[in-house]
Image 1 (cartoon, rainbow, N blue to C red):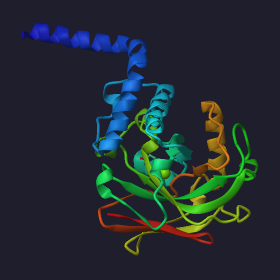
Image 2: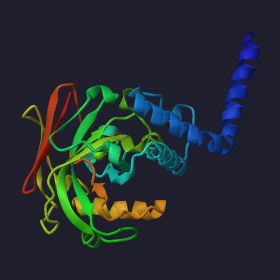
Image 3: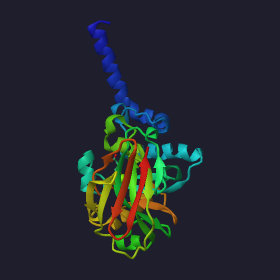
Length: 279
Ligand code: OOG
Ligand code: MG
């Protein structure tokens, strides 16, 4: 190819990319969702969507919804929602400062004291969180106090995150489309919700050794704020939080990369512990 021809081809590629979004959006959101779903199923990283698709935040959430729908088609059920980037520790670690949310499904549940297999993940990390179990539906503009009135119980929790993107790198839209990196969750035994959860000390341990130390106060100053935010996002998405659902409030510390044959545990002041083995 001559230099001029090469230049023209490049120009056309750029021009078609500029014209693409409106047309590409409809056909490709479902395809992008299938690509992320396959990456998760095969535990094989894929390229960031943003490298070749200019998604709006709204489109990214639509990709997330469609990818979860694929799982539901295979028999998984909705189990709740997860909040992301509710602590500075997480924002700083990943370089994103917008709060996001993702969907939890029953196939993501790892039993407390259970085992999960390293080979099922791309590059799994774990982070300490607190989980709320709802006793009634919750949606819309509520104060943190009102949000807590819908809570049946709370528990120490661990989230397994596993970005489906190469090198665990992404833009805001990428991570939203990828269900906020969520891959698994573990909850400990449930405590009464009248306990003050605003500042519970916590330790994340790998094989018994502390790897992260923090407090639930890192979660927006009070995890109930993350719950209120979840109610707001639920309203925007038209998917009310349901009785029986779990809401993960977001990582209280930076996430830690896991390796195979590792015992992971979080211990939280006043409400206990939970853990699992990744093997
Ligand atoms: C995105 C998910 C963020 C949290 O708790 O803040 C998150 C990521 O870090 O990959 O789950
Ligand atoms: Mg998390």
